[in-house]
Length: 257
Image 1 (tube, rainbow, N blue to C red):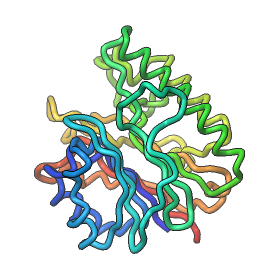
Image 2: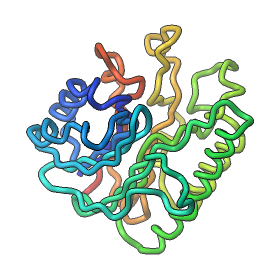
Image 3: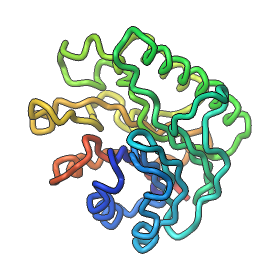
Image 4: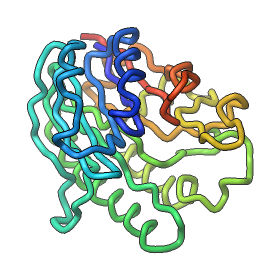
């Protein structure tokens, strides 16, 4: 079974790119982030025609998350991250899909830092850690997938000092991600490529994709049950180089059935 995550950066604008990738990569379960559309604007009919049923939580202009399942309808278990009933940003959706539980997330960027947006990022991380612990206690096959907006270590960003003040690489952001993983999650991509510089995001500015000046921001965290089934993991980097592409590339993991 193949699971994947793709920050699509406007699902309607990049629908042709998404459909082409789905047809070629044929993932069984996909998490999408940054839909940038209202619920009524989500292209569910086009995705269904391509063989994917979907559940989603949209939001005007920004945010928005979705879970796609090939050949079956995902069953929603949650449409928001618990812990703050006043948080109205569409950043988390959870569903049973293809025999596993999938939490699809779009973690706050946190810039500029320091400031309220960075505080929100760290608070969101704490809520995710609390929810992650509860999920692991269920002893089910669970994947927390999405754009975490953190490059966990120095090898997850190209050699540079230009991002030193960015929220994506701050010690607090990295520590929060590390604490989540240490609960018992397996970072699928890093598990299969422990020392390789692999990126999932390349900014549109300064020819960064062509120079491979990227960051690894998109992660697939697997519960122990799924980690034992992990066969391979990778990034469909070439998708980022296509016309009209998102600034992210899909990241995927292949699991034994």
